[in-house]
Length: 183
Image (tube, rainbow, N blue to C red; front, side):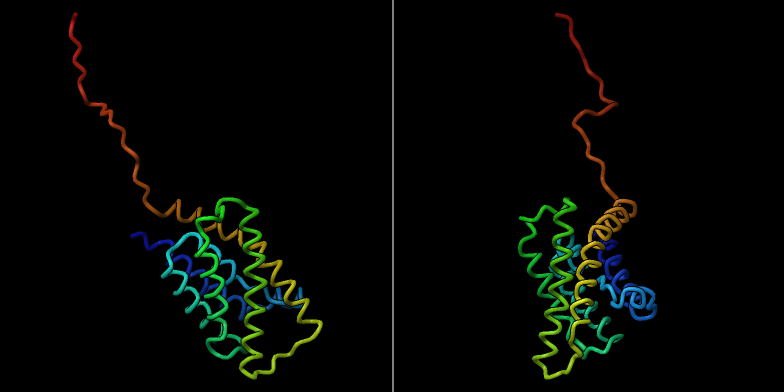
C-alpha cells in the first residue's frame, strides 16, 4: 500500500490549520479566514479510501477546533458528512475535470460552515451572527472552491513525483531469439 498520499494529506491539513490560526494576513485583508479543510476533504474523498476520509475528518476537525473558539469536536461531523457524500458518489464524479473540482469545492466549502453553525445553534452556543457572517461565508465558499483544483494539482503532482509506478511489460522480450525456417 502507498502511504505517501495519506501522509501528505494529513500533513497538509495540519499545516493548513496551523497557518490559518497563526497568521492572520488573509483574515485581516478580506475580513474572513479561508478554510482549506473542505477542499482537502474533496480531494481525499475522490482519491483515497473511506478510512482516509474518516481519519481526515477526525484529525482535521479536532485540530481546527483546538485552535479556534469552537467547542472541541464540532467541526468533525460537517467534514465527515461532506466526505461521506462525495465518497458515496465518487464513481459518478468526473475527478479529472476542473469544473467538477470547482463545483465540489464550492459546495463543500459552503456546506461545512453552514452545518457547523447549525450544530453550534443546536448545542445552545451563542455564535455571533449578522451581516458580516454572510460575507465570511461567501469568502470561505469562494476561497475554498478556488483552492480545490489547486489541491488536486499539488497532490497529483507530488504523488506522481514521489511514488513508484511499475512499468507495464509487453509480451515481447528484447533478448528473445526468433527462429525462421526456409520453406
